[in-house]
Length: 384
Image 1: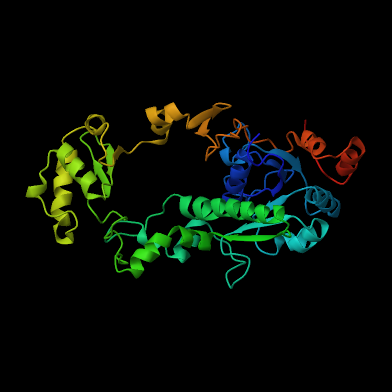
Image 2 (image 1 turned 90 degrees about the horizontal axis):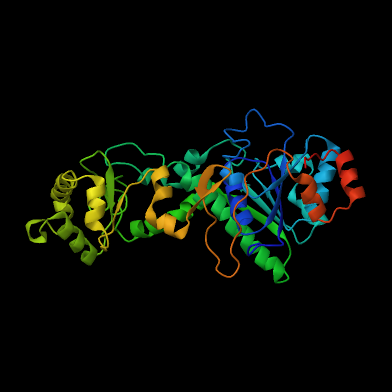
């Protein structure tokens, strides 16, 4: 069920951005078979196992292969021959050394979309170096703009590199390449690099910089907490409210609800007056609790919202009304997005254990009993 129903994806076990990109495709109905190692690699990072907090691993079925064995490589190639998409997140050259590189895969399956997720990209002087989200967004220029004025750059979790500039970019590239194939084009390689994806996420900042509306002094600009009316403020109970009334009419509503007079304050866009505005907003928000401010701003267009924790977010009335979160095997998680009203995505299934449901996947992919037994002899492992 879903808009990608019928699309077959072979995913090679990884952490971070590649599983997230694959999750997006799986949520939309793609049939994903993940090739896992027989045991979790000791240096594979904090990948979660089992029941089943590995949310980005949802909606898969798993087979196990030791790709250091030639017979297991042969089994992987048989899966690739039947796939529409391959997704891998190894360092450049790894798949080639295993005998599973794009040249071999595309020769076996000319309509294949072969998607590669890395931090630095497949080429360039840093391509073979290790790294993580924070390193990639540092090199992209994005990290330098995140943090308080006079302070150090602050890691924005791992959302900018791994997920926004990584997995989501990967999924978009896969979808575009699939459209090209369905229009009669050949299969091809998708080279998704987190440094480039993170830089793309910062496109609006590059534009503001070019137009003279952004400085490289951290925490002094419109969207980085420099503007007092685009920031967070503590409430009387130690919680926080987030405000963002960029437009003057929304700003006027916020001032009215805060009990402040525009006539007594500096102009909204007068940078010299921003310290006074910040003092006024700080004092005002400290006058009530967060929930009191939520009630005060209810129904307004003042662009003010409470800063919720993860557990609170899943219980917020708006998300509850839309069904924005769901519980799967006891794990609360976001529902698949975006929504498709004509072909809605199915309820997520938890991430598989290693090899779980692999036999069913092989049968669904058209392997008969004899072929499945031959694959088992080649080293392919699975559980019912």
